[in-house]
Length: 433
Image (cartoon, rainbow, N blue to C red; front, side, top):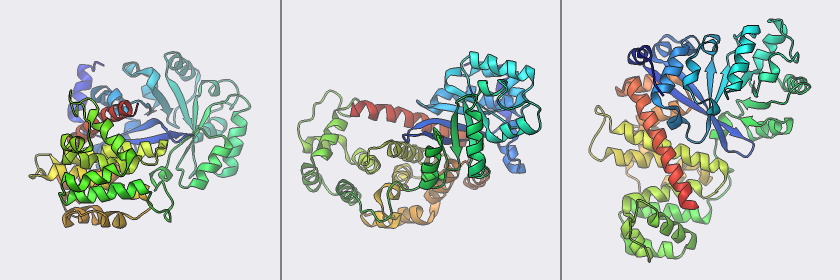
């Protein structure tokens, strides 16, 4: 993608924050990311969405950063205003990967409807928020179902916080008299919300429920997870291969995974591994520790767990990169940062609290304090990462300012982490195959 001279100037004078909301399909797989951009100026001034009027910045930023690296294998929703829709700047985006989420204040006049048809013909998909349909019927003089706007719509976004159950059912029933778009439920908070939405025919979902623990609180850790945490504890104690080898030999699945990992491209090179001891020596303590921590997240093996694995890998890499920032870096800090990132979500799959998880591991006190109480520099980096994942731009601004990291440096590091995570995901998928 090529940015114009004007675009480059905009980028040099604007510091952009980036966040992504995961959008899940009915199977729990991430179908798309909702891309959220804010300028630092808007966050400072408390404006909720300045990029609704700074459409050029959105497209310039996505062109500059490389959308493919941000999305991985998923598609992307972007918020679009009337100005952006009517401009030619959308042409630099990969239409087959982009869903245009139309802001509620867009007027669906004849000119706009013609433009939306052109964009659909080019390959873009169109998403409307439910409040837009209310506006259409009540204020803009275009009747829902008159074959004007609805036939152009692929996805309708319904906010569960602002739409009652009866209103949602009425909306779905009315729309489906004319067309059959995919309905997307946002602000899904509980499993009951998810089940209800599925029963109503929703096909896409997002919200805080998907960041909650994936197992019931009363559920005990599985045998493999117990073995993994025992090995992690031994690695933190710097135990040797003689102590570790029997644990692998007693668990065939773990041994098979170890062989696959070590024989994969980039680990053992041309050396073929034939014993557990040889595999452990070849892999080394650092890589073995990281792999053990990752396996804690993949043991369940479902789509939601795969997304959690991507999330934890991404936050671990981001915290590692942040710890290498010139105003933060300390000897040995980046290795600790990566481990802290990997451990920070372990309670979401083990059925235990984070405190209980850490009891299995001989972790240094300052790392425990970072994880449990957000103390020290690593704790502050966790706070920043939490804010990014929550798309809380005000917290992102406060945290990055406290750490002395510019908004542009933060976004650049986010994109590096996302690219690294996508590449690792491809490698692990190939390894499983």
